[in-house]
Image 1 (cartoon, rainbow, N blue to C red):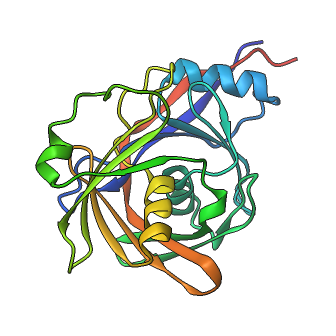
Image 2: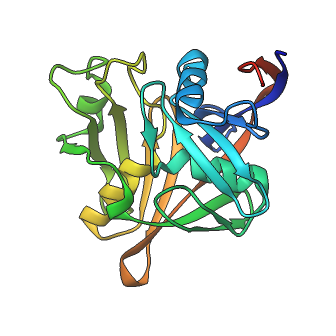
Image 3: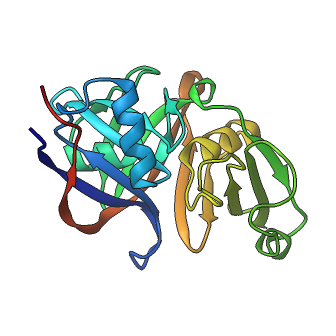
Length: 229
């Protein structure tokens, strides 16, 4: 028998005006998707940069997929899940990620070694970053960035997965922000994509906080799930 389950769509790392942010699909009741193959198929069908399956809402156990692969860690899905589930920690395959709420911002604490590899390419100005085609020529995941105000830690960035999954440009990328913060060793205020905002802050013992605003991007709706047996 086919069933429908609720899909919640969030925008994560919204700008100060509540606009933009990276779309995140959240399946809070994934019982009809018991394995990686069925989850990967739904993530590909939905087409968000990431889709999260919540396996245990009280403990924050989540499973993260792009349209083409499963991820042990990703920044914007974990910030979004922490906000939605209102938990003190989320638990992706990479390990326990502490979370906290601070006014309009939701923060997670993570380690740079959890993030997938990215090429972090610095440009001379934010105008050069703005002028890049989508995607730029080349292969591999590219995080293009430039200082807007180095003294203040303000960064302009754009992100290009450059993989064959339909995501040409990633609007807001917590994992890349994590890597850039680790590289530079300082707190950052990142303006990415069309107007998303990501805040970061290095902590003790190699930990880094990533924070941003989250809102509902669309009304809760049903999605067709795999046949249950």
